[in-house]
Amino acid sequence: MSQPKWWQTAIFYQIYPRSFADGNSDGIGDFKGMIEKLDYLQALGVTGLWLSPHFPSPLWDCGYDISDYEAVAPEYGSLENFARFLEGAHARGMKVILDLVLNHTSDQHSWFLESKSSRDNPKADWYVWADTPPNNWQSCFDGPAWTYAPERGQYYYHYFMKQQPDLNWRNPQVKAAMWKAVRFWLDLGVDGFRLDALGTIYEDPAMTPHSVPMTLTELRHFSDNAKTPKERKLAEKYWFDMFKHQWGGPGLHDLMKELRAILDEYPGDRMLVGEDDNIDYMGNGDDELHLVFNFPLMRTDRLTPDWARRNQAERLSRLDTLQTRGWPCNTLGNHDSPRLLNRYGDGVHNLQMARLHLALLLTLRGTPFLYNGEEIGMTDLIITDPSQLRDTMATWYYESLVNELKIEPAEAALRAGTMSRDKNRTPMQWQNAPNGGFCPPGVTPWLPVNPNYAVGVNVADQETDPDSLLNFYRRMIRVRKETPALVAGEYKPIHEKASKYLAFLRFTPEQTVLVALNFSVKPKRLDFSDLGATSAQVIFSSAERTELPLTKADLEPFGILIATL
Ligand code: TEU
Ligand code: CA
View 1 (cartoon, rainbow, N blue to C red):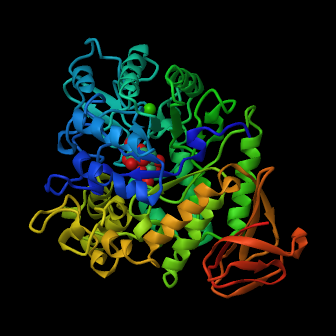
View 2: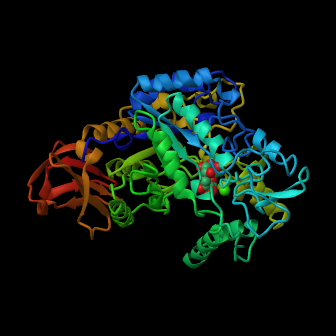
View 3: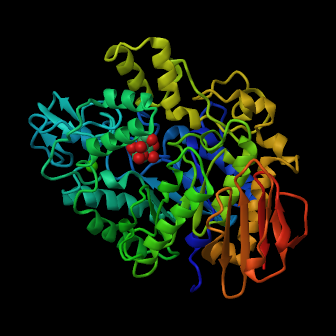
């Protein structure tokens, strides 16, 4: 492989700005706090930071409803604070990519306020307007996708919530305005962007109605109650059928080529990663997105050797078909999904499994993305008081369960709290102190802090404990960075019939590494003599060992073994 690019060797860490570090004690994360934590991030060993939106927003979608693309939300600080943060990250060898929300703006953005004011203003055609709803399309957040604007006497389209009107990307003025914002941040030295929901940018021009015999509420409730594989399969089909005309419309490849060309004008290999798993959006591998996420790896309640093997076979073979051989990108969590400790744990061995799953993520081929808080084992906090929810998707669901489906308020509150993304966005837990050390006692954080900060789930307690999850993450990240075969080596599965353990090789011309991961609660004695070597040099092991007799490689429950052959 020619000299790898920075985004191929990087280990990314997603920062959710509102919940990461509060520098001015108002209960809301900000850049001053983030600057104070740059040394912590450098010590963790991550080399790429992805910031969820830090732009001004009325917060209907916690920042993904942007009202000014060329500014910093005042509660996070100033453009000057942002520049200091970027400078501090670069000084510590960390790159920074921003969240670029192209599909929609906030309904408080000046563009939308002008567009909806009449039918003939200069921005009248910057959004998707219709005299009456042309179809039964739903939003994925809050019911019908067409909302009436009395000022204009027409309906506007929104794939997400009504406070997030979709831009009309067939209008060249929209593109010009957004590319101006892209250049604004690239000129400041930002290293690239994570493209939010890019599949939703273009809808079906024929406006084809969906064929699902349900409203969004009914479908959410049906999914909630889907228990048997048959019901879950039907729910999945309904979700696909309900929205398939609203994303993936023609035009996205040309748009991504244009955006890529802008980034390629800048020095330093500025990078684009799409919030999508469609490898088609990488173009020939070098003319559209640099990366798309391997979301299929996450789409399971249980990570098993067979699941991982099949996922890698499918993804890597597809990436290899691209003209310039696409680069993989793996993740197990983000601000939209349950925290990985809960999601992939078995309820008994969650901490051991979290270590195993991190080892999987950091030994697979491709760029890994971590989510803030996973390194200390943060878990979901189910908020059962609807008035404390900040995720509008959840508050809407609560109200529609109670009002539309007449569900008992207590049950509706539990369902809403469980589906709410607030559960995996609670403030970072820095110490065993009130509010988890996120903000001072007496200050109310914007979301409640998970009380498990008091039982070891906090940075300070784990910093000083050599056996903590935090120090495991640091060791695992260091091993990954210091092992060329793990960074850029090829991937070759071995022992492919093994159902309880996953074993594979990662290799470059200079180095071959054996990775063996025991996904079972039972110890395993493995025999790798088929590799033609009798012993191997351990570079990481979850059990105390230095030498490794390959004929009798003992792996303890959820054991991790990485060795050079
Ligand atoms: O999410 C896009 C997306 O995939 C959502 O439809 C997702 O399924 C939803 O969040 C439920 O899990 C991006 C952002 O990651 C998300 O936080 C925003 O709410 C959304 O776009 C709108 O900007
Ligand atoms: Ca759209």
